[in-house]
Length: 216
Ligand code: G6P
Ligand code: MG
Image 1 (cartoon, rainbow, N blue to C red):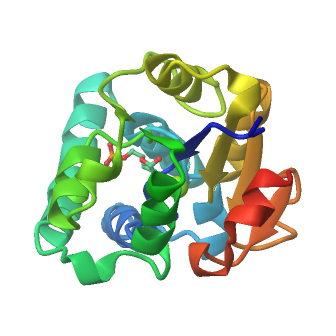
Image 2 (cartoon, rainbow, N blue to C red):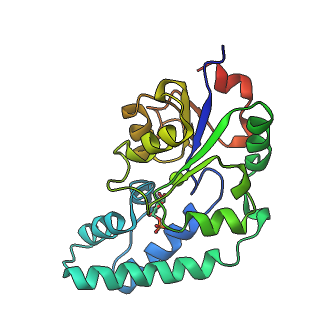
Image 3 (cartoon, protein in one colour):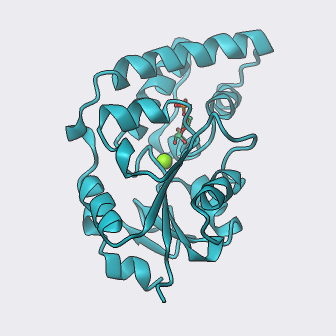
């Protein structure tokens, strides 16, 4: 019997390079408010919800805002972000994404999306990969965001696969913690030191083999 029966993918920074668009839009907002933050700080924003990201950024800038102002600022960031992603093309898929999804499909592995983004469907459509997914769980469907395991547990449930037979692919520290708490295996995409809690870390999906995934 196969050990892994389902693969749950994070979106931003795993399948597509939208992590850079999030960073650009948040930085523009911070700069407008009179401060800056680094790419290292940005690691803490990966995987967490829009509103939580904003609250963290405002803490870094030591700025307090009313709930109404928070809504306005997160809307402003999202408008800039949307301007960038509406022009996305299938060519903006990260190397190996489409091939890896196709290989999993060919081998009968179920595929789910587990993303904190409320814009996930737009991105899947723009890059023409929506049809690969047997289940899509995005930021509109969860109460609590990563590192809470909710997004992945809903995904496994929709796929009807026990968590122990799922593997999560993530670029965010929060997402890796979420997967481990969900009792799933996890592959980190990115830097080995930053993502050290993952069961395996690779630089990108183009480096991943199906055998590696099945031997976790
Ligand atoms: C992903 C990204 C985060 C982003 C979150 C919400 O998890 O890694 O950086 O803040 O989604 O995205 P959204 O598109 O809803 O603003
Ligand atoms: Mg991500």
